[in-house]
Image 1 (cartoon, rainbow, N blue to C red):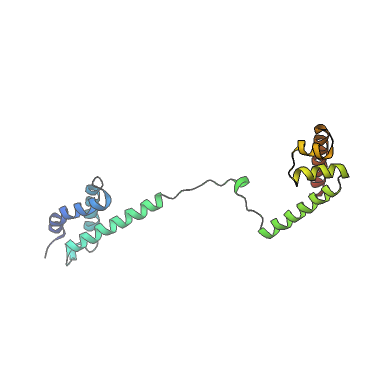
Image 2: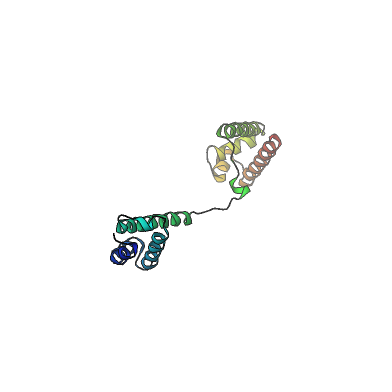
Length: 163
């Protein structure tokens, strides 16, 4: 019967190449020592029918353990920021809030004086420039700016009051 020591001397070079191909040639000598230490410390070490196969199995298990440790070491942890990562509202609730906001906005636009509403809609809905509105309505650009500021202030107040 071949002892573990003889099997290690005979299988050592092959195990070193095996470990070198899978773990890198720099890590292989240390891993080979670990294989022998694990095998020698095993409860089965004195009664092995095939010590060479046992050494190969220990080497394979060592590679598996090393791979698992590396995977565990590569876990990326992102810090949790309460303000940035807090739970968002469910979609249904967000939809309700969006409809409420739209209702407030539309009510505010409807509550504008006629000329201010017309200037506002020409700019925001029809996408006309201040110059184009000035030309179509025959008012100065400064008056267009006045109506836009008035409309935006009124809408902001109405939406803020409704929230």
